[in-house]
Image 1 (tube, rainbow over the protein chains, first blue to last red):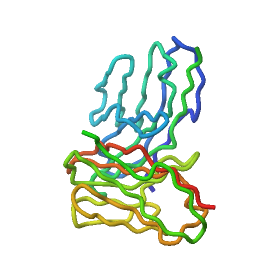
Image 2: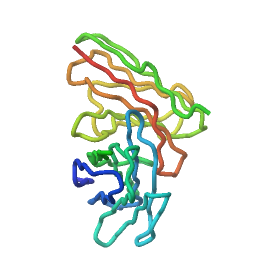
Image 3: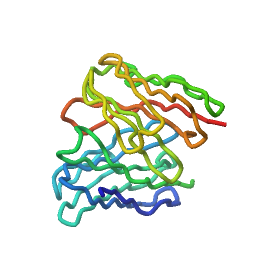
Image 4: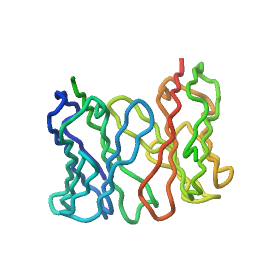
Length: 113
Length: 112
């Protein structure tokens, strides 16, 4: 059965800290790995990774995929209270229904002032 | 561009009542999805529509039906609500042959 596992499930840090969120996957015919940020409402798209070893970066957030070891990490540097959210990781696969994503349970990040 | 919109935002039902959750997107996407999100369970796919005129079951379809009314709209119906269907429901859409899905704001449903 395909699965995506995120760790830790929750994390509390102080402003200015750097955090690393983990996502491992076991997905048949893996195609891509996506990260979303969920605040109070809808998940919003952060990154999609398809190639191993290529870092995607947006401001203080960055992510990388390791297709050999089947995991991805999301780094957030110089955290701010606005980074407090649930971060969701999802994987897609070839051969399954087009566009379907398998989600992990999320990591709840709390950033204290 | 409103993106993906959902109505209603909140709903309380009694066991056995029926209701339809509405979803519309203005991004001209071919594919649309319905998920439910429960505490500690992540997002689970209920039904999806790869393109107008087609619908397929996801991971947790029991107790739900869907209708792809046209390219813009995809509705989710609960025929006889049960307390186990208390959840937050998200609609999403994507371009054909891409993985990035865009989500609506969600509907919080409580079944008493």
